[in-house]
Length: 464
Image (cartoon, rainbow, N blue to C red):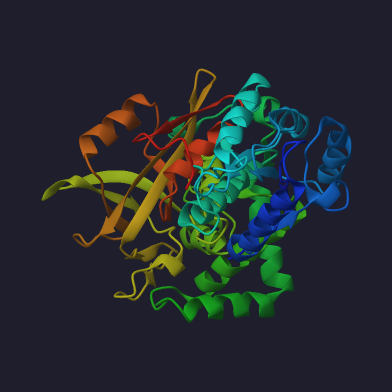
């Protein structure tokens, strides 16, 4: 699975006007060599070699040329590694000009030089971060640390993930397939507010049009439909499904994929169980799983905020992990801190535990449990015009068997979790992914004006 859009990060080394240029260039070369090793494959770096002497920003007069270069390359984020004390004036000003996520870091200095001036890199980053705050520019920070160390590697990778969440949030497009099921008041949202405040656009696709598009795919592209159905059957026990049900499922997936491409969609909210069975004889459960496995985060039950949560969850993984959409359902009777994450059958097959063979019901509901391992869940939600973003981490563990798709989720103290969900206010729907992403999701909120971060546990303010 790949990221839908490549992330572009501008790299602007910073130095003081009067400090030694030779030493600054040495530091810049160290940064660049390290970045070649640690930059995620999904990220493109843009330098300023052609617009600033030695590719280093050091004075106010260079700002317009540097900003123009970065804007021309449409950078999504800005990394300003300090070669020495740096210049807080240009850091603050460039950050305010670019209006993208900003990362500050400096290489840890060696032992003091008794015969001359040190680089004083840490001193400079402390000045620069204060200046960014004076300009009202939100920023991320990695502790002053060795260029070859783990803190820089992890911190820079986490910052790229943060910037990717922010990019995914800005101007997001959600496809609403069908309508909201009548009983589901909990998934109501305000489309006008999403668009006017955050630029998030909901594209509706009515039930009649969805069914018609699916039937047209069946009629006009049968060979393609059969190939999709066969590929799915190679991974899943489909013995309970009729051949026609398998074809209908494959055709629905293709129809939604076509609509996603045509409308530049980032995530999908699907009316999965009320509109499809009467017309196609299937639910949308494993179509949701298929789409999520393809890198198209998809939520059940026309949950628009759930789909937004899924897009942000996927972005935090840099698109490397498929998200799964889940109900929070039952506490384990034998362990108070283990909760059943479950849904009728929409989880991606790629996440199935290797110890079990995934299956599917006759109407398209997946039947398997997920692998064990670290899991992050999140929920973007609102009430009375207040938007909050919850995230928390736990562990997928073994537990009693259950129909549908499920994973037992162990946390530190479930009673705290339940209190948070009830009074958050959140609902029973969450987006999940394997890995630890709560800090990334929390950090991203500082760049999303109008969204309050609400992590289950406090996270560090520095990355890495």
